[in-house]
Amino acid sequence: MRQNGVRYVTAFCIDCHHEANVLADRWGDEETVPGLARHFRCSECGSRKVQVRPAWHLRS
Image (cartoon, rainbow, N blue to C red; front, side, top):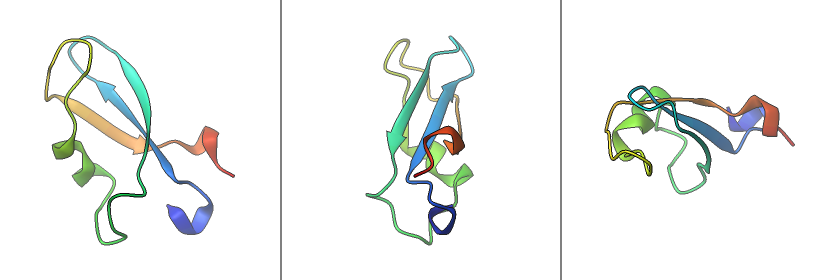
């Protein structure tokens, strides 16, 4: 992901459909994009049912 110029991930809440772009620099290169989901909780509804994907639209 980072090799392709992407530093952000988009976190999407399955329960309420809230979406947020999060800078992923704090997690190391060994962390997988799907694995990042365990670090997130929706800021709108509090759900832990979050999907994470690279934020390709924010590529530099």
